[in-house]
Length: 155
Length: 178
Image (cartoon, rainbow over all chains, first blue to last red):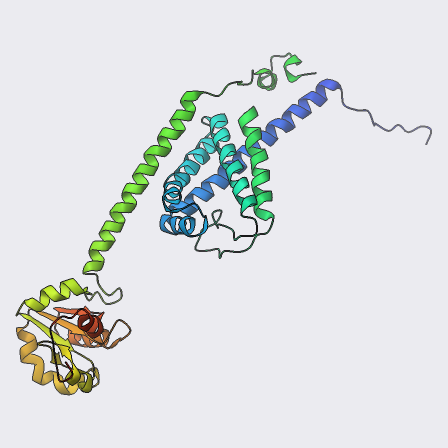
């Protein structure tokens, strides 16, 4: 063992900073594209069958007819616009902030209505039967909120 | 050490040294909201248009697979007032005798081949032939209509809600039971 050397030196502080910065940028980019994909998918799922989405909101959200109708009319298009902004890199921070706000509301709703069936918004409504998702929904929304915060703060 | 401390002329370093945007622009928010507003208005309008079209076609819709027009009660009633319209009752003879739409002729689906030759002259004179059965659950009117079309009568229409709706609406009827 006496003649051999093992290279276990830590990288120089400059390299570490570079590495950290690169990883942080990559994470931000990944968050942005993940949110873009999720929101575009959610928007397209709703827009392709607005009647189903409106009916679901009116019947299951507990919002009442008028608020549910307004949400059903606006939400899919807001998701589409924000999804496109994130995907195309236009007004990313602003879109991230709106998405973050939406996700906080979704998170609050999924915690408040915990144990109820999934809205089926993230896949085509016809293809997916309503299922009890347990804690998956709040966890998913929580993780997406973290991503949105990252995009809104540092893009 | 912050990335900005890494001085250098390479593009990578320029990227690291780029000042991060610290404020969000109000105009971008407004732009996003304006686009959303425009799209949701368009979506709501097109949805309403589609619904209106659907309502229009369902008033005098057609049977999806055959293209035979389906009639609603008000359209049927309008046609009933036209003397050139012929109503055909495809329920059993017993049902027909008990009660039928006033002026309707009996053509039980099971006796179709036997009775058709006698009815042909009347059917040929009719501007519109309205075929009806008991209710929407009864498929006889569809089968009879298809057979009539195959015989060359292209002016066939179906009143799917049939006798039950007609009599419940207290529209003109005839028969021993009425």
